[in-house]
Length: 309
Image (cartoon, rainbow, N blue to C red):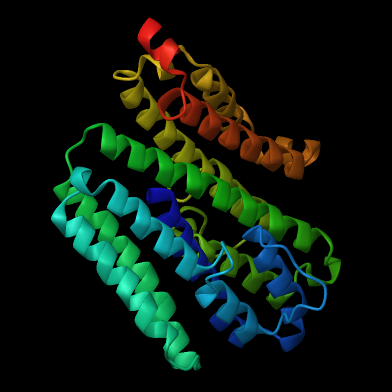
């Protein structure tokens, strides 16, 4: 539930920033922008598929057959919430239903700029409201820590994918170096992670590529940075291990330790000098390994192993 909700909110924010941020940039930038958006969401680009902005937004918002779309993510989150209905509060269930029904209502409306903006804003605000309600109505037990684990694993992989797609696109566009469009591209990347104001408070409004990448990767205090997300994953796993013997005996903590070490002691200059894309791929792989280890230890474990432990 938590991962699907985080995914839907991230997609809405990314579409919102890129659809309306393009008003400040030259139209030819669309040729890079929308393929980059699709790659950052791990959406396959089909030959002959329209990359016209409203076509991409329509698909990623309302296409039920596309597992990456907002309507698919919110629908999956609601189905998951129904499966654990007895573990969540009535207020959480009501907000999840309110968000789901809002998505269904907006599907029947024409996709004008105004309606699109209102829809994407409603998804983000509805998700934030759900998180706030969860924070104030749910006991800090096993269910809470599983929600935090799912939420931040999803956020870590989403930020890694977004940064990787942006850096690949930026590396192939030397003509942008030092231009106003370069500044706007990095500003939009930070906005896509709700990070622009937080970055400016740390580094001023002078947005430099290495500083932007460092902030999104290594900042320990910003909620959408990879480092912060991994720290939250560690806190959730430590809490869950206290009541899950199979999780305690798995190698998930060893895998997590390697990830924390890389994010705690490497400098952005060293990461870039080695191979930033390989570094990001390693983080993504280790996040998937943590997910698999938790799944095997807590959900699909052999019954005889559980009885032995």
